[in-house]
Image 1 (spheres, one colour):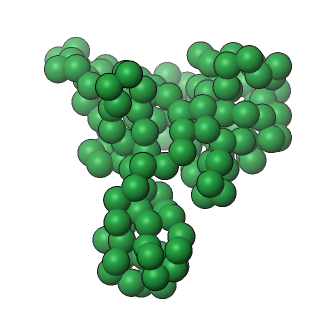
Image 2 (cartoon, one colour; image 1 turned 180 degrees about the vertical axis):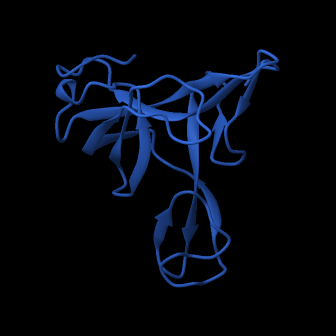
Length: 144
């Protein structure tokens, strides 16, 4: 992120050298499972052996909708897409989608992680979060 941007929530994702982002999850050796966002204890077993892991950036769309009414405290654009993406390792993530039109999306559609600007603060700082966009070359749409 540049000086003119800030993440919506610290610790959920990080920038990579190639200007892409990656989600930060947790992995518990005792359960053998990953989770997102990263928690101090495994949500499956309660074990405190959680390690930080970078999650896959590709997945498939499982469910989606359009948010058409501005949620409390949200100053960004509406409508926006919202859904569930199953990552290539099987973990399902609740996420913002870059496509707001539900008719432009399809079950099983390939998706890719991107940074998405939610809003701009009064001082001009862009507030950025993670989102999933249709993967390049996907017949259902293109990354926005």
